[in-house]
Image 1 (cartoon, one colour):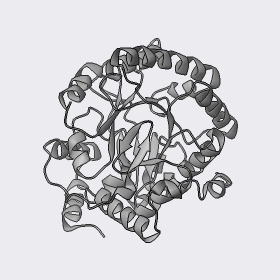
Image 2 (tube, one colour):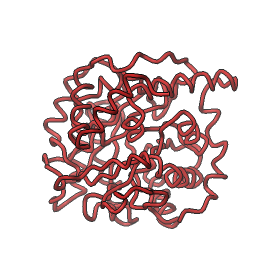
Image 3 (cartoon, one colour):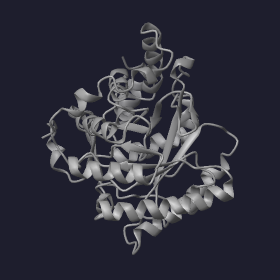
Length: 363
């Protein structure tokens, strides 16, 4: 059940243009206003991934706080980690407006933002300025639309944030930058991973500490493409995967806005992204960390991602439709679930339905 604050905020924000409402939400979180009471959770939610100790497995996905302005406000809502970005080397405006659409009847969003962001110089300074405040804050990096060497853009992102981010996410799966998803093709991916890992290792030698590197993939991949990505991820020893980005599919969507171009997120993405998650878990085996994202909007959807193979989960659209109190409610209900099921850790739940999810057919 939504709180009174969430209901009032939703009514006010949903009367506005989607992007203006989003910017106001960022301003409120940036001010660190008390938008929700701190959740009461337990140590049962602690999760260790890639050498990082997460207080809980629920994170904010990239795309919400593109410019690292609201990380502290988001952590204050209870999130166990925040992923900022996508950040490109040069600032860019992104695609023409309107470019963000609410599909209220579907609890979904369609966006064609196009990596609008302030660029690595400005975002690096914001990340650097919060040093000492604690909390796990990752940075999602991408390539500029007009880049002549997109892999070099990812190398620049690694150099810019490799010494200050908690982890880095390589975003090659957005549908809103023409040709970007071709970097998921095996030959291109092999070169990309080789170069960014070499750059990461150079930065790590200077930092004297490893920086975890995750690869974010699309939910619209064939089984053959998933197998290729898994082989490259394992062969190059990348630290983990993020499954998945937004989809071009409109399966299950009823809104009149379904025709808008761009990536779909929210509840209709849950099944597709969870099937792809389970398939990747079977392909990469039990050791590689996977962050599950797509359609997380409740305690049960978050837990189901873990059952399907996720170590951590992220939300974005769920916060838009569920309000700022939703993360805390999910975490408190996760704690109650773990206690009720006598689980010392939610890791005990992982993979318990992976075969069932991987066997599902997608349209």
